[in-house]
Image 1 (tube, rainbow, N blue to C red):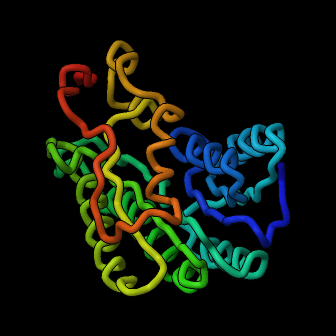
Image 2 (cartoon, rainbow, N blue to C red):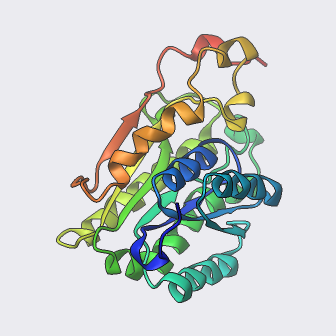
Length: 248
């Protein structure tokens, strides 16, 4: 049951309208966390809100395109004005971009991938750092990809963006050393999401875990009890899945 907002942990989950972000946001709300959920897809956010409310909790829904830096700044200001702190940040939103050799990737395609996968997270860190530090146990997780453990051709923009994200987060972790806040990277293996559906065959997807089956794994790294900082954590590492990929 919902309690006074001042006594609850506050979380921001990006890309929360579907897939992994949807599942993590639901799971956090079930644990009594007040979730600020953001995504481009308003219908998906509304569905999330209905589920959370049916379970006796409330949430804050913010439709937002993360390539909009001004929109991110407004989101950070909203969280500051409404809550004055942030206990949990889940940087989940990401796009796959073109599956193409580099000669087929345009500059616009490249920049679109980096805008969401890297630059948006830079703006989030910049805008929310002080709020994470105000928490008695600020915890942040940014989702990378298990593909970085098994580099494949034709994923160049995606792989480069996730590599950049990891470097940025590890550097940020160094800035948080000695504070109450912690930040880590999760390299997520293949889970049944819209992104996975664009890569893998239907038969292969049937063998993969669903987001709801994986979301609980994130709770340990978002808990006040977590002491890890600046770690790259594998969850369902990407292994032995090449045979189920769609072939062009």
